[in-house]
Image (cartoon, rainbow, N blue to C red; front, side, top):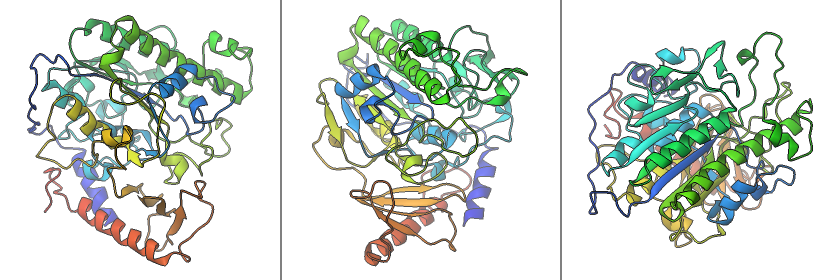
Amino acid sequence: MRAVGRRRFLRLMGLSAAALALPQEGRGDETGVGRPNIVLMLFDNVGYGDLGCYGNRLAQTPRIDRLAAEGVRCTDFYIASPSCMPSRGALLTGRHPLRTGLNEQVWKIDELEQIGLPQNEVILPRYLAQAGYASGCFGKWNLGFAPGSRPTERGFDEYFGNISGNCDYYTYIYNGRNDLYRNTEPVQAKGYSTFVFAEEACRFIERNKNRPFFCYLPFNAAHYPNPRNKAPGAPCIWQAPDEAFARYDYSPQTLDEPSRYRAVLTALDDGVGRVLDQLDRLKLTEKTIVIALSDNGAFLLPKRGLECASNAPLRSGGVTVWEGGIRVPCLVRWPGRIKPGTLCREPRTSMDFVPLALRAAGLVLPADRVLDGKDPTAALTGRSGSPHRFLYWQWGKSGAAIRMGRYKLIREQDSPKQDWQLFDLQTDVGEATDLRVAKPEVAEQLRTEYERWWAEVASHDEEGSRGKLK
């Protein structure tokens, strides 16, 4: 079964763009008046325990914390994959990585030749264009940059950012070459990437203030520094502007990595603040849905010296399906719909934001493909429980998991030879006590459901009739 999934992925890597059947507009004003703007801010590798509003008492993140106070803070929010490329594909399509065929980090293929997300997949800006939305992407793309795969060829009206999985925060170098592009052409920029991307987003908002817009701002912070992005002899340390260090009374020359990481978080917070201030300045705050989340849990890989982030109180981190790899911070502000200071404990997923955005824009959901996301608005406003009875994960050979209510079934290696473990996340969020023997009926129910789901997503047409079961 796993071999079939792998073959399907490799075949999809070579697919050209397919004809797309887009959803029809719902009733509404064709000018877009009354439809909310949408700002989607994606953090890179920020852990569940990294932000003040999630319990961090050392990091200074006042603007993100204020966003939580003005909207809803989600405690049980999940991404679809514990690594950035498939996570981003799921976020923008509303579809599980296994269903799209992008369920791994494609790093052995040059970015300029990567198809990445199969080109027959429809992403959010292409849907929203049917409702008159302008769309811009500013920051880390990491979904393939081969012809046909670039942001402005996938539905965005404009793009400015780094195309790969990470780049230097000041030089924009990735693996020895420039990684910064405007639309489809390489460009140069001066300044700290978090601020540069935020300012590009602010200018986009200014240009489109009189029409509905979708602003996707995938920051490259707080991705750990990569020695391959540094000039010979340059130190591989966390990078932040001097003013971020000054907020802690740290020297910008400090070599203490946790201190430097906190400065990166504070600079990220400042970038978020610039966008929120722009919405205030243009009197767009009441007309705009703002969503902020992380693309996966913080990486806690050993013996590298740069793992300073926190997933507390969760177990493990990125590239695992333990809670620390897949449960992430998520905040949503929607004036007039979500009461300030709301807490949502219902299990939800990043794939839910596509149906949320389509419904908010007056569009019906597509009929030609399965969306794994479900509109979470009622759960976010406290009017109902989670729209999902089950949530599912499968990450290569590194794990599989399913959650139902308070229970989660997981195996660390996705192999029939690996035993499943059962945890009660309501009483054991750190996944310390295996209940499989104590609750065999629950474990068997979840195992059976996982196998049913796997058979469903693995049975989709390999030639790309994405969403139509055989």
